[in-house]
Length: 250
Image (tube, rainbow, N blue to C red; front, side, top):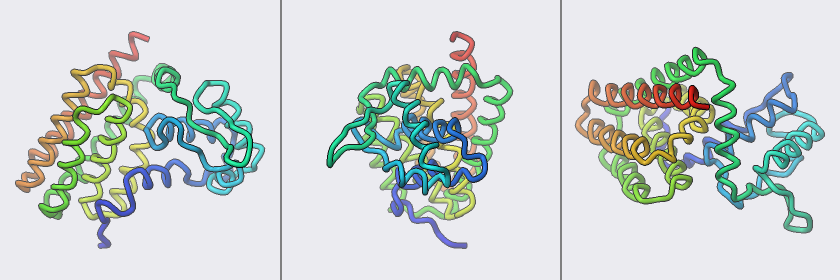
């Protein structure tokens, strides 16, 4: 089985690949808009970063340029991007964490509770499988890289913290050395991370997630499969429980 290197391609690169996977025959404006919102919400693009051009996005998604143009217009209306003219112009992510949170909250509010629980279950199963095989295959040097990412992330502001935590989660998944498991984890991460980001304003929830990842790295270092799987299960279930309660408050 082919190995998946923990640092090549980068975690953000893998997220971008998943976010821009071809949409095909269902290439409606709403689907393009949803993919772009997920990419921005997941931290795939940070404030001030330039999105690919309309032509590049159309090629990546497999849709017409006019579809992309309409989707970008919807994002501008939501306050998620701004368009700059000129030689170095394009569509740029706006420095508006509040706008991103509002979009994520609306997505959560419109999601049926059973769909949220099912998404959490799917994420839990794939993440647990990745954790198990990482225990069997990861090297101390690879785990040291993930541990360093977590150490550097601890005191970052929420929006930067989320991106680094996502990096750590994807790196841990890639240590399973399973291309199929890692690819599915990346796909789910682009869908679930925007919802998880709603927790980031809660310091207690953010600290619990961070500490759980540190514990997972240590369990993986010990090759303790049961502990690693348990940590993943409990973390995902606690996040889903938090999201269900938050959804009820909206």
